[in-house]
Image 1 (cartoon, rainbow, N blue to C red):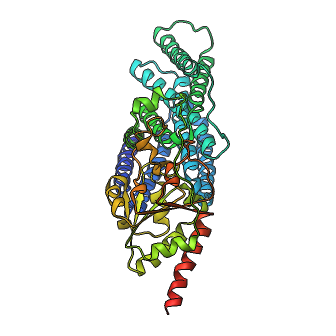
Image 2: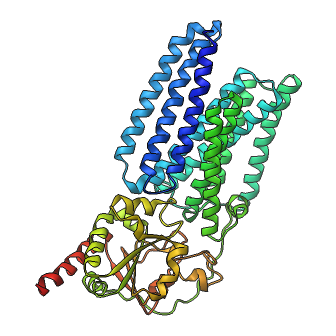
Image 3: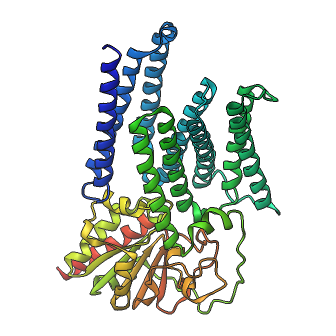
Length: 481
């Protein structure tokens, strides 16, 4: 009876945790309910973690001497990990969220791989469970090392994609070698044949090859693909967790893993659509491939203007559409932006925000940025909803965005971004671009928008420029008074 009751409580707790995770994810689908959704999901995770300690009540007799030490190690790991997560979560700025997501996602993949390693070392003979465990180990390891490389790219530690001739062949060979090592482990276990190396060594070789392949697969990918890469590895981590949940017969892990995997897959599909690329192209064909671009002559010239002049022009406009980009996040200018928007609204100007699905370095980053500044959700529009309105807008204000507003995606078939859906800012009557300099975007190409006749450049840090714009509009009010 003592062993049955804890197992019943664990099952019920796992189901409750799974429900809370699903309910939390549902509430995360809306910006209004997202904060409570995160809280519900966190409670679900806490329930699952606390319930896992009940396994101590039904351990085998030979394991009981180690029970106290293992429980202490588990508590210590929770305290250290929770403390570091709490500290980094509070300390990291919004611009560092993509890097943090990459690291935490890698940690999830690494946890799934670690579970698989313990199951394999403990001995597993059921064919289905063995195959599932090896698959989870492979996917989790790739997610771990790949996410670490993605973090390095996002954090600026890895400046450029690392490519070499024959790289795709080398990557394919590494993947095949990894599969063969995993297949050999399965063959040894199921057939009972004596291995050429000790089983722990074979398992270490398998994990090492999987980690190396994750690195090789991610190194050649450029910065423009990082949002997609993050979503791919997110799906990988969820799948790995779900597979290891099957190995452990843990409902919470299975449900949570599959939900995360499915969400990551859907996000990948959305990102692929936003970049006009197929999922197979993102996952296989273009990993490491270099797309050539014939640099044609761009007609027109850059036309700088002052922040005050741009602000006054917008003050007397009827409709202004604002396109935020990573430059706004880097300058931490979202609060000043909304302050400027409220001045325009007080003057009767209709203001809307246009969000591109891959703006910034992480899907949804711009939505979070604006929400942090207190921008009402009914002012924020996605690409497909806002694009038809640019033709009638008096002004399009681009702040720190680049590739997602480049008309070369519609006009230049040799461009790396050809065919990618963009925000049609160039169709507005007047365009102002706030930018620090004349640098290129992630795609590494010059933005044809900047040279359009209806476009003016306002150079400077976004927060500084927006402060100057606020002062210019307020100055008009004082003069009128």
